[in-house]
Amino acid sequence: MKKHLIPFLAVLLLMSSCATNKKVNYFQDIQKRKDTTTTMVKPDPDIRLRPEDKIYIQVNSRDPELAALFNLNTRDQQTGTSRRELGYTVLKDGTIDFPVLGYIPVAGKTRDELAAYIKTELINRNLVNDPVVTVDFMNLQFSIMGEVNNPGTYSITHNSFTILDALSAAGDMKISGKRKNILLLRPDSLGQMTAYNIDMRNFASVHNSPAYYIHQNDYIYVEPNRKQANESTVNGNTVQSVSFWMSLITFISSMATTVSIWLAK
Image (cartoon, rainbow, N blue to C red; front, side, top):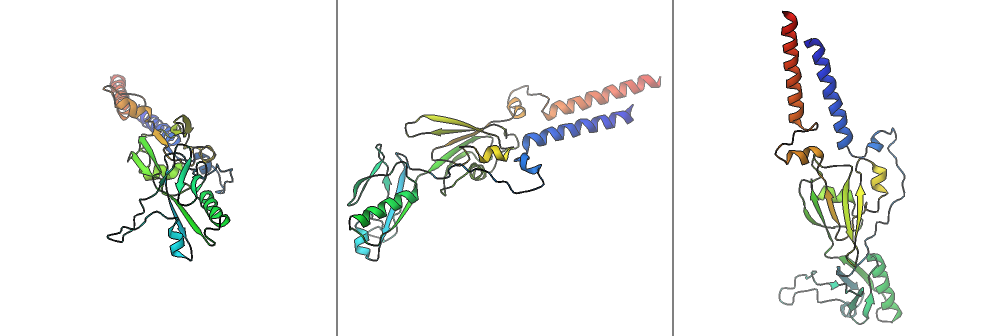
């Protein structure tokens, strides 16, 4: 009887391991392929400006004194140190008050588009003949919660910031996080939320999702799996919990011993 019990237990453990891998592994559609090259249509990666965003704009020219007319006071008068925290906050109507040019529209533009717009305006108005315009984001961030190792609010450090970057910044998902149903909430300029669900087990689904690229003020929530959710309760003994399988193995072993003793009589 015991000889038959060992293979049975081995099969149970193997089935449990296979089921776990299907729930935990990332990008299973790629792992199953022999080739490693995947061509897909990428969503628009560019972050576009919204009201309340804060930006830093620097104008340079061969004539430093002329360029200084279009820059905020970027140096501390007493110490001479850089003051890059000085910037422009996009107003509710989507504009900023820029030196000499006045109120200019910026909402909906990318960094490159805004830099090109300011450069064109300076040249067309005969203000600066050779302007070099740099635009940087100053306060873009996202929040990530739930089953990640380091939940919190993080800065968006570059223009094309993806869901993979966001999970990496938070120390990756815990093993107890649901890979198949990550929730991303995205507010627009009016505060309306759009919800996206991402299945991290499928690369095609992730890469083609509108939520692949993180935008400013996104909220990401990683849901706990059933095992973790049940273990947070007093009696969380489910088919996915370690205690369940330990209890089952103990029960089967006890039954096998009892049957062996009964047959030996």
